[in-house]
Length: 151
Image (cartoon, rainbow, N blue to C red):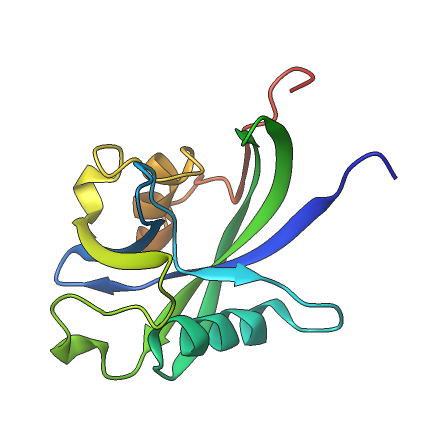
């Protein structure tokens, strides 16, 4: 096999008009909390497990919102992933102004839902899709891609 496509389960947790984002320390980009779907693991369960590992909090995957194919360069190598995006309820998060990561290489932050581009959210199509998906807007596509032409 020439390459692999990673499958990721991502969660959208919104509180008071702000969405919970994650980023690798030292990285300018942010992404939705979650992570890799393991072999024979349902995507929603994977999201719940990843949040428990990253935040130490119980989570419940809710409504499936959509999917985004994403390709990018990381350390000079082409990466390809499929992000499956769910609404997520994270118990105990209401009382946490700045959630502390249990993993030393990532940190969490809250960003206004209206300013996702300024937060450098990746994959970038989520910046326009998330507000539409959350509103249940008619005609809001449930699929996007950054693959482009032969990327």
